[in-house]
Length: 349
Image 1 (cartoon, rainbow, N blue to C red):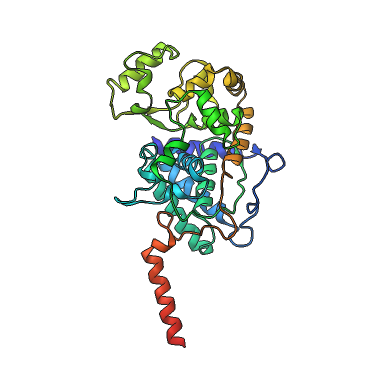
Image 2 (cartoon, rainbow, N blue to C red; image 1 turned 180 degrees about the vertical axis):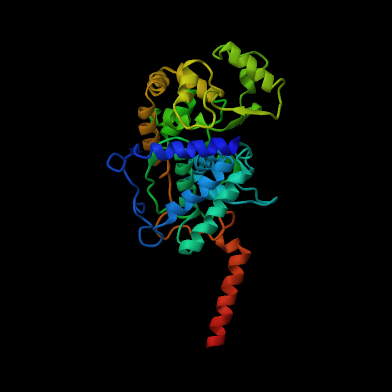
């Protein structure tokens, strides 16, 4: 079933490939990034990534949402620097161990490392994990039925990860209301339209009951449509349920504007979702996206391009990791290669 649906989505995407959203003339590009960064060093990077992700999504289209979410959680914390990809230890937990990130799909991290290996085989170690994550997020959108768009590239990988407190401070919680989220993201130079558009990423993926049980128990949120609430109580019969449900009840595996149709019909899952329609500042934006999918796509691409440049490392800052899960200085495989090179050099002398 998943395979057949994945194939359908991929075929559909090829049919709409002409709907390429251009933002190059309408958004500022951070110094160090460019639209053609790997034109000489790795011209096939994007085709290598897309080819592999097509295979992945044919098996499980649900992985698209996982990859998109990884990019969001990377960028919002300390910038789009691949820090969320790093694995910590018992004594030094990483961003992945912080509560908001514990539900990130571990398969998504594996897919990114698989892409790292494929790109390295083709071009050598010239493409950063942060760029691979950004391209994978774009392809996750497109191969799920969403818009095609270009991604400015040239990010480098962080040498460190953020603490739990920094993660909690920078990732909006699903229980927050729209005014709180708009105010928080304004500090990252994202406006109300950006916030609503980026929230549209919830048109694909799953959510754990714990993220929205506050709207069901002990009393039902009055802004939630009654039949929708009844169905959710069937999925999450008590508090502390470990079950999951789809974020978008109309088209859960397709990237489209149905998420906003859900909000207009009071069928948004999280407080942070539904309140976008209740909050006067964002209500009309939600309505416009519910009525016009192309408008949503246009604004989503613009917001993703802005978000994808948050506090990026470029030039000589950071590094290009050989393994996305570990910095080069902590990579035993890389260290052994360096040692072998040094030994060979010594023999030549």
